[in-house]
Image (cartoon, rainbow, N blue to C red; front, side, top):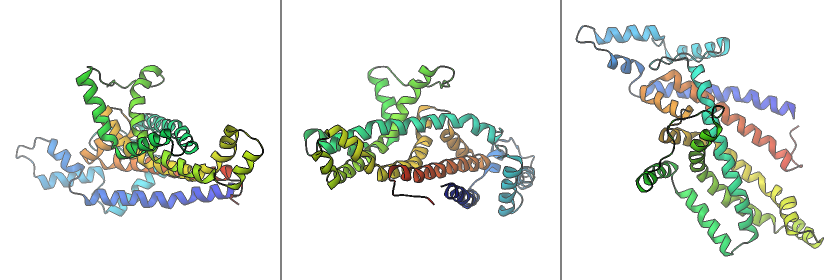
Length: 321
């Protein structure tokens, strides 16, 4: 197991190299850059030559060299100095800003996944056990509804209609959880529920399908024949064997949560990594975008590793040796 974990961790290095390289190349290809934004904010009044000014700014920012050299410099600073650079337009240290905003996105994502699990698993199990009943039909319809509704639209509707009908809107001033847990919870729960809706729907459908397959197995019938209660058979024997595909899909939902945070944080005014990425993209602040991409990629790779390791616990036949 230890050898397997070390090997997987080493394999993340080339993955991160490829992700950051593609991000750097894409940012240099798209029209416009931070230099254009900086020059646009200056009052030139015809006194400065735009070409000379651009060349001077590029030299100051260290982007007057080929792209491969910029990329290697960035990795050198990261590995040797643990430095992600400074934001060109916004002017802050990228690493400090990520450390400040990461807990917000982390809290939002974890809560979205936990809510999805707490809702989808019991609902899917009940739907499978009561197959083709009215309960099953209602839950199946809800799963399809959750999958179909785009989270950004639901978020906007949740803000607009309650404010029109009941003169109520979600809190807009973010309060850290260690300052006031209750106020923090009031602001985080609603966007977390909206983010978890799509994961909810997929998990409900998949968990129900897997449960229907498992409950038809011979060992389940044997367990019933021994006189075990339905509760014991379902939760002790059936659920664990149905979880492997569901856990896989749940892990694949982590990038969906990360992508959703970019939109949801912007809609609800949460000062997280997603909102930082949007602000940096509008300003073409490349160091910020690359730093956020690196952190998100590391988080996704870690979740995939944890998911793979969980298979050995769910199924004793799986061994990592």
